[in-house]
Structure formats: structure tokens, C-alpha cells
Length: 105
Image (cartoon, rainbow, N blue to C red):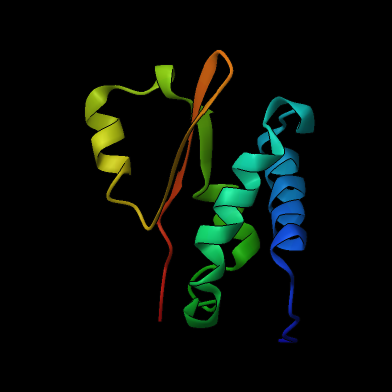
């Protein structure tokens, strides 16, 4: 495995590109600030990440959820708030939730 250092904006771009590819979502459907906030939160866990258990790419593909708040029940939202990554952002006429559990060593 080769380690690279990424700035926050580059990490956000990587997450945005992979997420929109895997989720088949138009990249313009999710504002960049959501990906920037996810990158801020996830960056602190990267040195401890258990890449043998789950690659970063697979985490984005299978664990990262980004949806309008309205699609979740109150119980789901409360459960998601316990995840390692939880972002709730009011953006114009929609509130988006981004969440995922990080697997650490």
C-alpha cells in the first residue's frame, strides 16, 4: 500500500467523485460543502483506518449515506447521530444528512 498526503479539498473531491460514481448521483445534486465537511470529519480517522477490514473506496461505496433528512425516520436519524461520521446541513430548501461508521484498527 502506498500512502499519499491529501489536502482537505483534494480529499473532499475524491469523496465526491467516488460517492457520485457509486451512488449514481449527479455531482451537482450534492453541494460541495457537504463533501468538505465529510472530508474534515473523516480525515482524522485515516491514520487509524483498518484498510484490511474495509478499503476507503468500499467505505464510500457501502457505508457513506447522503440523503435529504426527510427520507429518514426520527429513530433512524437518532441512530445515525451515533455514527463516527454525521453531518447535517441545511442548504436552501433541503437539509442533507451524510453519515457513515468508520472501521478503526
